[in-house]
Image (cartoon, rainbow over all chains, first blue to last red; front, top):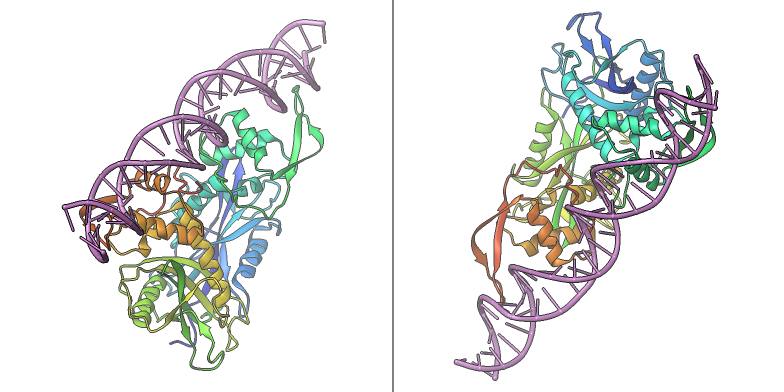
Length: 219
Length: 219
DNA sequence: CGGGTTCGTGTAGCATTCACACGAACCAAG
DNA sequence: CTTGGTTCGTGTGAATGCTACACGAACCCG
């Protein structure tokens, strides 16, 4: 029974959508070990700081994203050998940002064929991708990739990117509207010489899980 | 950036099924603080010990359960004030045991209307119950409540207990068998003056999640 | 005012889900 | 050995939900 434990870190898997492709925010390490390798953004938890708060702080400090993001705990890693410098506890968080939230110092990489990461971060990224995929099937979390207001075509594009297949337009709309998670707002979006599109917002930013026979996909 | 972090513990939510009611294993604290209050079983992680290994060790040492149980990480808690003695990281695990695995030193309590727990353990228990409920809908984890071999009526009883409602016998059997997760084994179970029941085992103990349109319930 | 492109909408066939009832197997007791 | 009581084990039809599919509407630009 120890009076203190290993150093406690938070590491973040930050997902964004750029040009219809799922991307993850990476940093390049400046120091040894793993100098020059890519890592997930992260940092140490301060004394008497709640972990989740630390995660939000790191998000703010290291990426410039504001607090209007979706964040949830992903998994906690602690195995000797994770970091050559010594034992470590790494609490990881899963973050979804919209393109509006910019000015990260890191750079976004496509989530498939991301480069090999330092430390245990490959493992973390894999877990994040897996989590995102299940969220895409059962929840409205993917809507957090969008800035409000958005069109139904925007929404469909998000789900198609995450599920990596085309979806039928009419069926998709029926389904997503049946969730009763969107509200139509005033105005239309007009772009190019096309019919303008209706605009929507999330009804409640908190209701993410679809209870009650709420399996969204498959189609 | 600290050279060490707060002490690291594991705390366990251990579920069992007794007489068709979901129960959770609790200990009574002998020392201050919270002397005499109920807690989840747990313990500190040793130096250079992987957390999951610590969880299995605690499970073994404090409850006598063998390693043939279902265990997965639940959530990691770390907020100042969780423990009056000081800061702490509590990695929690979710465990399902069958009635066969006995000789715990703690005692089982019904999961609904469990007594108020010490520390942050009420929070942990709530999270565990919630996790179990979703597992009951999407996975075969509930089968781990049973000892093998079991009858289909046993299986139905487990799901009915977890979902807290009656299920139709014929539909249930069709559905559970369609998962192709069970294998029939030799022999019958005969009990009382009744028609004997066929016996089954889990086909693979590792395949828990139902992919591919695998929503088990609702009916 | 005509062409090009995206937006927005209904239906019919098919598959899945649900509701529902009764004979079979067994043991115990008479 | 027959009867009674209880659990085991099984099929079908109706309703619901899912999927596949095509075309007019709205707009801007040239």
